[in-house]
Image (cartoon, rainbow, N blue to C red):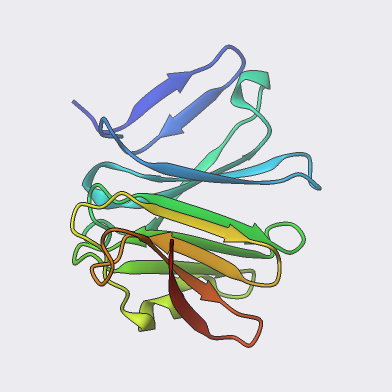
Length: 173
């Protein structure tokens, strides 16, 4: 059986060149200023992270493209995914995931460089093995990333990227 499958909606055809596992994770962002331009980030079989992008809902005729933004073997195969964006037209995008060795990792996108490892990777923030707690929030002045740290496993640890360009961590509660 080929790993390529076709999913049909009432008005369009999406070609998927990967497979999803039961329990796959995903995060999505939308640019409401640009006709609901949408990006969906999901974990495919083998741990690759894909970006699926299009404008509007598939059920209303939108077609979506799909590309691998992180190869298999880097993200934990059951990693949660979190995503944020700011700036005009997806000017800045950040994708967060947990690596195979249980560190919080960041993919950074900007128009000039595409997806590259982000600054958070240098902080070496380790999560509890098998934790699925991960979120990201932005207010256009900074990013907050929440996870379950090995240093404080019974609370949420938040890494905050400040306006000064540094990451600081603290525990909630």
